[in-house]
Image 1 (cartoon, rainbow, N blue to C red):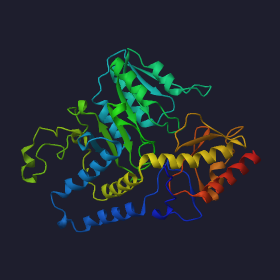
Image 2 (image 1 turned 45 degrees about the vertical axis):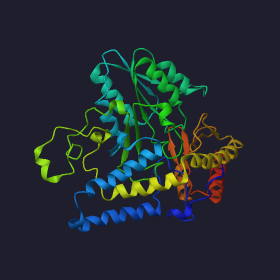
Image 3 (image 1 turned 120 degrees about the vertical axis):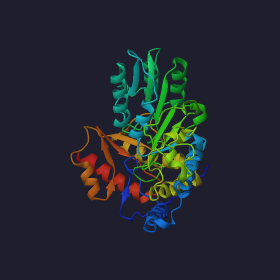
Image 4 (image 1 turned 180 degrees about the horizontal axis):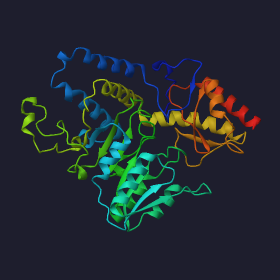
Length: 381
């Protein structure tokens, strides 16, 4: 399978900037930014916005996301954030007193806060699975924590700090065997790492748009398995009701919700500025292909990992191909993030590790500059 050549020409990234922080926030594609500008400008002339426009763009984007992850459009809700998606899920999960809610240590706060709140309200227990100290199999440790008392498992596909890939297919099988609900936060993998949705069959899957989906901030997607699509939404919105397309009958106050994941859509989902941005980005990701993206980024991070290891800077084990989380001998050098930024080399620090997360806009010169800076920092101590 051929690697994808550098796609920097599709982004507005000056040559002197080496940006390795897609896990924090991806830059917008030029086409996506232009689509957003056109969408925003529609509100300059609101007399041209008709009733059908509250539905057509959201349905187009919903279908694109569904195509990307291998779902049906009926399975996808449009949400503003992971925390919104988590709150929606927690409203529909049954947890009895004394049962357990299982999470991973150091996971992203949105899922942890939601899981803790649900456990507190239900008088359940939160079980936190630490990463094995010897760098062992975190997936195996998670599987060991799921038992007959488990009501809910909240897990990433790729851990946002360590870049560790969780065997979510095995986790899903264990959840089904004990009757537990599985909620996946795939924000750090969707768009950059393949996931066989049919094989995993999670109950819910949530992805923010602004990272590996190359989309806008304040927009995301909630996959809801068909078996849960009769649940209760977080909001009592009008656009998620049967008959909402006929504005003349809205004051009839229909109690009948959409018979799909659309019932879980956020209010004001018909965002004329953000949806076109997400749509343009999804079209590009589909065109590149997620498997090819993963292979291309894996080759890049593999080169970086090998070069850093020669200087005692080692990557976390079990990492995703698009995600490099490294440790320096003796800990992170003081002021390293600021020194790199001053040289226009951009990474991020999380805990005691440095995240290096490239994308197709990075080229060999970026990698050379990154390595030069990090090797120099390691030698200075």
